[in-house]
Image 1 (spheres, rainbow, N blue to C red):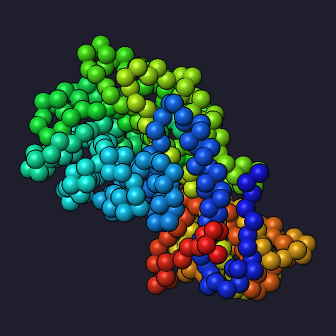
Image 2 (cartoon, rainbow, N blue to C red; image 1 turned 180 degrees about the vertical axis):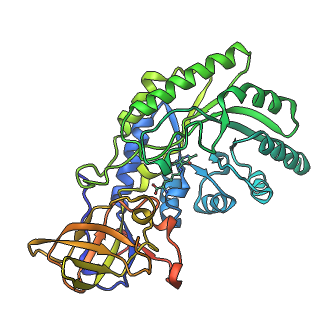
Length: 384
Ligand code: LLP
């Protein structure tokens, strides 16, 4: 099993809080994802999950493509070694500057979310003497059964083009200079642990493909987005997500045409489990009803608990005392700066190291400088 061993001796020399990435687990995850996708799909790593340059470099060297949502991510991906042609660019509000950055770099495909955006990309491409390959992000109206804030594929969400507008959008692309219709793009949401929503997505794509064929439209590529979830409750039991079940769902259900390429954009499932936020306990504070473990990391380093109510498994790395329950909180001046309430932790004293697990995705990438706190540093198991 690829469980993480924390090098506590080496942590003693470092200033907390910091992100710790287990690169052996990242490599094992990349290998598993590649093996499961073999012969079926090209994986574009969703850079938004973790854009740490060393992590990006490792994923690029493993042969993955990249899924970017801003000009900044495109620049970071190219710097880390991803081939521009292997980059797809999504996002509901791409600015002119970002579109130029993408065209200049020669990225593989724009995932377009509206007709005005299509026209703008075409206009800029003509100005620059380039052609932009475009895929349309279609809103498939599939419920991902996940947290409301990370559901994206329902009719009410801001993302994508309605299914009924799909043919018209493709016809517009065919009539415009500067753009070339490449395919369809989807993304139904994130942290999806069941296969049923992916199966529904595949069935929906089959219907849409039949519609396109009836119209005589040739589609070169299908991109099913990301969304495969990870086990936040028991990271050591499932350090590597079930990529096989995920890809087999598409193998079984999606009717790809012989000339078609399948793409996906996995983020969380690639980097989530290899990263932990390491904090020190500043104080243990007793009140009449509770005890608090106050960490030197807070919502500025890991915002998911405050933002989505997520619970990251926590462990005291330096105590073997009997467990007690604590409200584990950060130092930021917000009452939502709480990592867990009545959470069982080995008896804790000032100076102990606490690991917040499964923080490799949407952890470091979402850190902020609120309260003038510095951004967290990162360290890697193979460099300590
Ligand atoms: N493709 C598109 C178009 C996306 O919007 C996303 C994520 C992905 C791919 C990657 O999805 P993944 O495989 O990581 O589920 N900050 C939230 C998650 C937001 C996800 C946004 N889109 C969190 O911390 O849970």
